[in-house]
Amino acid sequence: MGRSWIFILITVLTVSNGFKILGILPTGGRSHDIIGAAFMRALAAAGHEVTIITPYPAKNPPPNYHQIELTGMLELKKQNEVNMFDYQGSGPLAFTIMLIILYEMFPAITCEYVLKHPNVVNLLNSNEKFDAVLVETFISESLYGFAQHFNAPLITFSAFGNSMWTADLVGAPLPLSELVHFWDRFLYTVFDYVDKAYYKWRYLPAQKRLYDSAFPNAKLSFEQQLRNVSLVFLNQHFSVNVPMPYPPNMVEVGGIQVDDPKPLPEDLQKYLDESTDGIIYFCMGSNVKSIDFPETKRQAFLKAFAKLKQRVLWKFENDTLPNQPPNVMIKPWMPQNDILAHPNVKLFITHGGLLGVTESMYHGKPMVGIPIYGDQTTNVEKAVKAGYAVLLDYNELSEATIYQAIDTVLGDPAYGRNAMQMSKRFRDKPMTPKELAVYWVEYVIRYRGAPHLRSPVMDLTLLQQGSIDVHALLVVIILSIIVINLYITKILWLKLVKRKVSLDSQKKRS
Picture 1: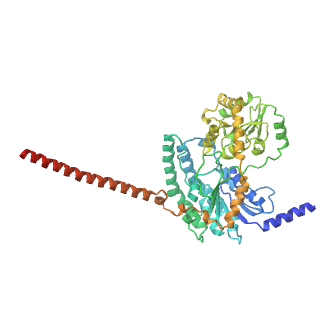
Picture 2: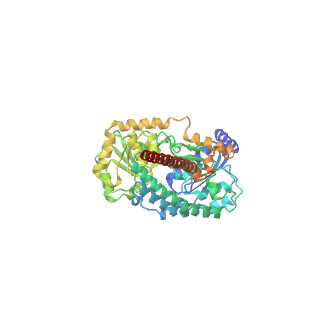
């Protein structure tokens, strides 16, 4: 009893000296919420008083972790739920089409929903004060107005790494030059222009209308707020991604959601411990659901799994699965990080979402990747290039291709060794991602938004950013020099010709 009171006293004293931080997680996507909640839990553990707007309230939060639930959002999301296999596709065209769909849908079903939610309206009408506002950057620009409303520095985070949405906030370059093949660079450049045009001329005006309506007293306009972001966190790490040049207020915290493994439920612990031939963990994430696999592809998995000596843990969103082999266990939800940490797990079959790929790599598990949409193909291709994964095309799924992919990875020890090497490289950091995130949030608050971190690029026009005006002047100067030289050459040539004609005439007369 005495120790409990001491713990409560320490917590209260710590919180009283901490900062007040508001976190806004608007997407309704479970994987996105996991990343955002990881930031807020880390800040709460560091002694700060956090308030989080989320559709996924945590159970038994600590006293300094306050939650404003977006009630009804998950039900709305379920009503609009689609079969993600219908959006299967990779390449720049498929990616651009997906972005345009998001641009059209998300402002209404996320931003507008958040801004008009009674619980959020109560917060906006309260006398609350915050030292910083943390918002996920995922089609959520109108929500940056919370920083204006509470007169606090704005910090954003990306759940999947760097993109146009994050790079433009701090003036970071985002070159496509890391793509080796010319046609890859050509196609991605073309569709990048399409994306930017749609984003600027169609999407941002819709977000501006929401911003102006919800925050009429904002000191900064919508455009000004977009250029006044104090800090951007990226859920990636240079050990895995292509190294990129970042300004100091763009910080990589890849793996922030990875916690120390917790004890597994008794049935799972027993199932894994007794799997002497190893475990294959199969999960298609939170948005892509295994239950939505077409029947032919689902049966292909079952037939391939039946041939294996290993046991299979399959995250399957139902309690029953027809033709389920005896070596397969299904559950609608599984503690993924804790499962991947188990030494008997030998392979992870995944859709290639960044969270799963990161957790698999952190624990040194090789993969078979079946990307469906978005960044999943890129994530799996990076793992293939690093030598710890095999990419399995969704359109080519069959009993034979599934079995072959599994046999390739499990039959070659190099995949496991490469996975462990990547794990070692990824973990080798001076600070954990959580410690790094806490440090930089505190830094921004201590220095009142840390404007000294802001790149001067943010105050330049597009012409100035690309030095197009300078290059144009250089072209004019070079062309002028060429024209002048041509003119002088012409004059000299005409004089020489005239002189030659004169000399010839003189010779004829003589």
